[in-house]
Length: 354
Image (cartoon, rainbow, N blue to C red):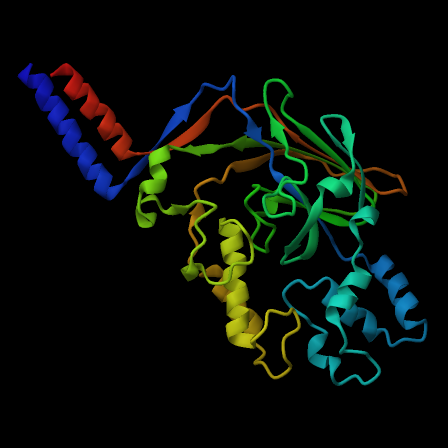
């Protein structure tokens, strides 16, 4: 009996030490029959299409325009972090460099109803633009389904379970687009993992099959100090996070806000067109700031892995069919719990046995 209590005492001491050095642990949950598995948010962002841009420039600026105008408009409408034409723009008097840049973006970016069509979830059709809702991102306006950042939230909430199956989303793109897969709390941003974003050009047929690993949190995790658990919950936006561009915290929203704050500090604005008197290395400075943003990971961030991604030619002049599906329903998930939970459990065992 003394030996047993010595073992228990040593275990408690080890747990107390773990509590102060590593305050949480992971266990595997295999009770999968009643799970609802969250499908990722899917964002559709238009990408530059030279032929379409040529036609629109012809419409707005005429056939006799300076062709440098096309390059400038492309840099404004599809800004990717660097405006190469802006440096020489003011030197070219034939080009309209000023004006309302928001209006330029609106004229040259495709609205939802002309961007995607024929949407279906598990074979059931739905109105694309009632579910894929506008979301402001670093890539400009994208259209996103299953996101907490849209108004209303989710647009159409996508979940997979034993009744509905793994889940399949079908979309037909009418223009060149980039597809982003991310958690409902995340947003598309420049640091998005390359595996989770796909550029789909006109006429391609794309099938994306993915797997998911979800993490759930014990109720006591939220009571732990931030620097013990080393992650933030969606409601934990704080003043020290700087600008609050989105309603919920995630690593991607934190980095995007961090970069926007840096742009204000350097440029006194967050517009994509930098003032002409800035030093030529400001883009590199902002890139370095992006790498060093002090952002915690999200406590509620599933892991998505691409199992298969096709790249077949569709051969139809109408556009590009896109299918996104979960390979299978998961049979395991991880639960993040505190060492305190384990300590409480052992303490109850000791009390009950005494």
